[in-house]
Length: 108
Image (cartoon, rainbow, N blue to C red):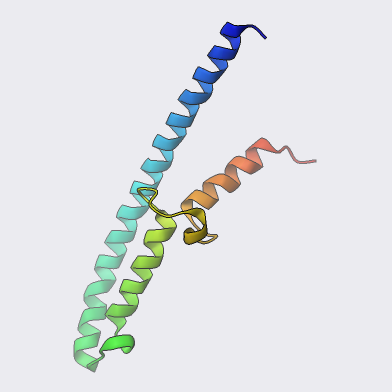
C-alpha cells in the first residue's frame, strides 16, 4: 500500500470518527430533550401527590423522580462525563457499541 493510500485511509477514518461523534451527540440531545419533557410532566404530578399525601424524604414521589433523572443522566451521558463502568449496560454509548459490533461482524 502506498503512503498516499495509507494517508487517505487515515483521513477517511478520522472523518468517519468525527461524523459518528456528531451523530451520536445529536441522538443523545434528542433523547435528553425527550427525557426532560417527560420528567417535567411527571414532576408536577409527583410534587402535587407529595403535597396531598404529605410524602417526604425517601417516600416522596418527587425524590423518586429525581433518582430516575440521575440514572437516565448517566445512561444518556450527553457530554461524555461518565466512564463505561459508571453508565450501566443500557446506556446510549453501550447501544451504539453493540450496533457497531453487529454491523462489523457478519452472521455466520
